[in-house]
Image 1 (cartoon, rainbow, N blue to C red):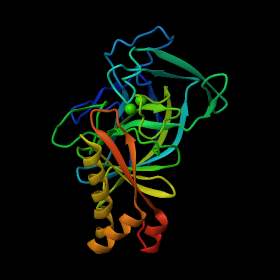
Image 2: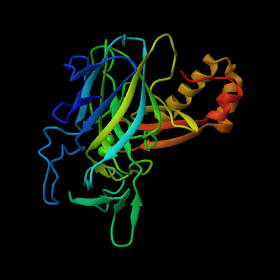
Image 3: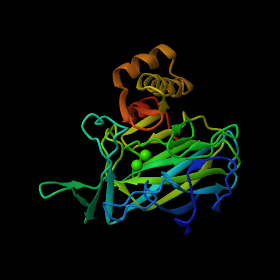
Length: 296
Ligand code: CA
Ligand code: CA
């Protein structure tokens, strides 16, 4: 299997980056990822230099991917390391009123559980924080920021067994992956998840001539449109409209699709701590089945 090692990291997504590896459409690739602190917090007194903030491994050039295509990324396996780390921030997140200092804690991860403290063990629910392709129009976007290209979406449902659809804006798509969390709550309200280094195995397939509301996740029981904006209000409207557009493109009239989403579409906050905020709309796939809509 093709592997991309931890030496190959980027801190932005851009069409200008030199690919770390090349693969064919349909190939399986293993990404070795650093944690969001660049693996620099090995003990609780360590402080990362910040030179490689939120690094993502890659980028991967997928042969045959052309602008206008969709990159289908099947997340076959996520493995996290034997420890996780969290770091407080006095300047970000919901608890700045109470958490005034930078402090790091390292947590053991054993047999699928995080040893949070003597009272509590939390089951691992590994997810990918950063996953995206190169943005359009030659733009360079930091791996701290989520946008139309994916990036730092911090969506709790991007887990093993799900399939993410991303836009192809540049030849080869230039996929990068990083910022694994062994667990995270919706909202990521303090500033981080259980930050881990690890390994992600994906199958990447180029889809031609399909229209998907990227970024979009087949999360198993539900389909999610994922959108990011300066406010949760804006992101909520964008995620809702993306799902509405998907339904109308598949034959539902605009009025019926709007009624249906008001009944069965669920807006969920992904994260409130990145430079843009992220919201997803979840729609049960039983509804797609009812209208004969198949995902590519
Ligand atoms: Ca993140
Ligand atoms: Ca993170």
